Amino acid sequence: AVKTAGAKKERMKFTPAAIVLVCLGFTTSTTFMLWMNCNQELGTLYGLADPSKIQSFYSVGIVLALFVSAALLKRNVEPAKILVTYPTVALVTLGAIYFIQQPVMCLAGGFLLGFFAAGGVLQLVTAVANEMFPKNRGVITSIVMIASSIANYLTVSAAGVLTRVGGTNGPRLVLLFNMAVTLVGILLALYLNACLKRERASARKEV
Image (cartoon, rainbow, N blue to C red):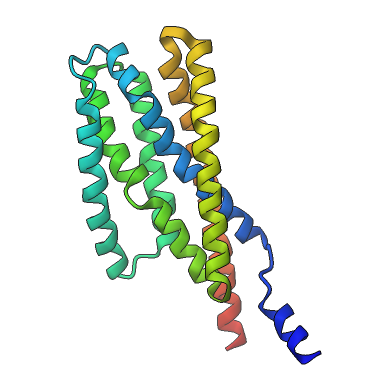
């Protein structure tokens, strides 16, 4: 009976914060996966001579972001706050690419989205998950990664449909869809920060 009670205590509770973390695993992955699915076609649409250059700028952004994010975490910047800042910059970048139809925007956007959308953002989600659920790290991390995998499948499917429906303008439709998903991710991250703030305030009162 004692063992059973102990097992129940260790069982993870699916609080609103846990559900938000899982959803963030989906949205953060979708932002960069959708970009990867449309950037070459978008470069061609905007008249970029060599669309493959976008991927090079994107890769540089990813590598640089990993170093910057690591430095921020060492300075004790909260990962949850970065999860608001990075997607916000990514959203602004997507909007700029949509409205400023110039070849240079594809290259600049590739770098910025590599930095702010793909450079370790999913890992920041798992870091927050581990902080919030220290006794169930393996479980919550696995669920977040499953959400990311589902995002991969659904993203490719959605991008394919939008490209077929939009025809020549398909890549720009993918951009709009990406902006919508990224905005949802920002709202989720804001809610997550509010949850963390409440939890810390509650912990201080108990002390």
